[in-house]
Image (cartoon, rainbow, N blue to C red; front, side):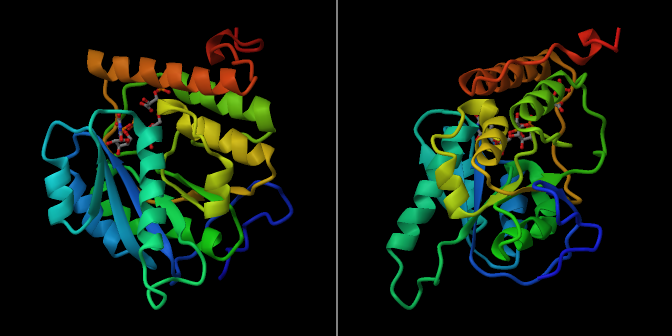
Length: 271
Ligand SMILES: O=c1ccn([C@@H]2O[C@H](COP(=O)(O)OP(=O)(O)O[C@H]3O[C@H](CO)[C@@H](O)[C@H](O)[C@H]3O)[C@@H](O)[C@H]2O)c(=O)[nH]1
Ligand SMILES: O=C(O)[C@H](O)COP(=O)(O)O
């Protein structure tokens, strides 16, 4: 397994590019809420990832055809009877992986539990490029990798408030400043995932994961990956979504004893 030379090996949290390579033993978990238009392409792309021999879609109480479309595309589908939020869907997905592994025959069983790769349902074809998240985890170079996405094709409608709250909160809690603190494309060892349970609920899940793992000494790595997803726009629904994200991050920080920062525009030096 090779890490590119610009990886900084002597830092507790390393930010680097890694090359794609063949790996084995990865379960892909896709939380999905009303994603019938995108889930098939995402499942198909995820199924071709190196080492990904299990693709589980967690239908988080969708009211559309997400389950049926995901199943037709080849995923194993588990679900919630009602919408419970992304973090609960992630936990359900991990439980499903353990259950499938428990039912495997001795011949089917891998020598070690699979790593867990969480990706969003709206990545579509770009999910085929998520492989660089897998290598550092399978090779033992990192306990959790996080995808850093390039600028998206269409501009988002936010002012960076949620991102800023999460980034500063993680920095205050751990000393590490993530580039994309909300990125949900993450690959974890089973040990790291277990250490982060119970996950911070709802939209606080990424903030909680980063803080909880770093505080316990796990190694977290941001990796540039050329992914594309549906960006959040500017209408009232989008702003309501951001308000919920803000509340989720605030809750994750509060329950971890982290005092949230003032919004960037109000902080000393910015006035
Ligand atoms: O109640 C829900 C809502 C969403 N999802 C799924 O969660 C994923 C992310 O949701 P999305 O609506 O795409 O959220 P974004 O605002 O675009 O997400 C950004 O911010 C989130 C944290 O706030 C991260 O989880 C995402 O990875 C990141 O792309 C998708 O697969 C959804 O289908 C659920 O499973 N349950
Ligand atoms: O659009 C986004 O990137 C997220 O919804 C976060 O919103 P923000 O711009 O307020 O951080």
